[in-house]
Amino acid sequence: MGSIRMAMRNLNRQKKRTVLLGGAIAFGILVVTVINGFTGAFVRNVGENFSHLLAGHIFIAGVEKTDDGRERSIIRDDKEITSAIEAAQIPTQFITKRSAFNGAVILQGRSVRQNIVGLDFSDETYLRERLILTAGSFENIERINDSYPANAIIVTDRIADRLNAELGDTVIVRMSTIDGQQNVGDFIIGAISYDPGLVGSISSYADMQYVNELLTINPGEYQTMGIFLDDLSYIDASAAALFAQLEQRLDVFPRASVDDTAEAQNPVMALFSQAEEEQWEGSRIRLYTLNEILSEVQQIVVILNTAGFVILLILFFIIMVGITNTFRMIMYERVKEIGTMRALGMQRAGVRQLFLLEALFLAIGGAILGLVGAGLVMLVLSSINFGADSQFFLLLKNGYLTFSVPPAQVIGNIATVSVLTLLAAFFPTRTAARMRPVDALRA
Image (tube, rainbow, N blue to C red; front, top):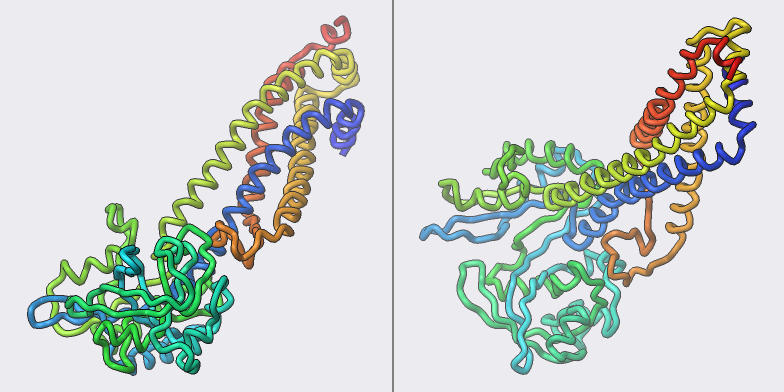
């Protein structure tokens, strides 16, 4: 306890020096904590936003092999799938059913490639919260509105600009049916949505019944089922439980394994390629998850966290030089004090412990100050409303930046800072401990 009190007193005696070194440590902790907080919420925000764009956390798609060896994407009867979902007892909020095709949207000689998604707007009410309409209304798309026919479509303002299209214009769509036959349809622009950039221009939305007609899919059939769970954290466990139940009822493609191949880095692409690589007949289903779709996002998080840690190391390499030089100065300034303590019976280990305690308290104090500063910075940033129409909406939650700092990373950062600070102070401290009392008193 005596050494602790002396260490605290010595730090308090040199306030300016303590504040300077502690502030440098605090700045390093602040920077890396904000980076960790951003990456901690990054995956969750992107996952939640993508889950609404893609309509699910777990996806089930049907594939048929025709007599001539071609593949047909369709789910004709989902009774066994529904039974498997119930048996798996996964925490399901709701289920979506969609059909989609990629086609050329044409208006007055202008053409744009678009993925046109067919869905039931009366069921997918959450989509209204994610799409910001700049013209028209959702009622224009639903079949209940007689003023707009069933072939109404929602396009983004960027696509509308590229086509020079306005509300009520009729566009021609050239696409392929599920059998690969060329087909042509027409859509009336019933609404125009704000394009937030990134993936906002990928899809347009239309009534599923009309999309199915163009794909030559019968009423009641569709291509993909999406399952919304109560929370993103349930995805992997729920997918494993559901896959086990599906295997008992249907012919299911094996899930993509994780290995060192380049293909395994994108599990969804690996899964979809199975239909071409394997020999099979009849109909099969494939199960994939949002986590597999966003596997590359996890790599971005690893890169950001690594970059943050490298920044921390660089900052503390610079700070270590300052700490080492400072403790050398302290040693020379307090050489008579060291000699007096040694003459009064303090051993070398006691001198070394005293200086190292000063360094440790300096590191911990700076780290705490840095965490407080990081908390204030994150609080201010998270209170700024960037708007749901921000170009970075995928990184936001309802228009706001969010932060999530894993406790393990905080502890790891503090431990790293403490070790580096002790290491920086060790060599001057060792020199001080080795001084002979008589030499120190003569200095």
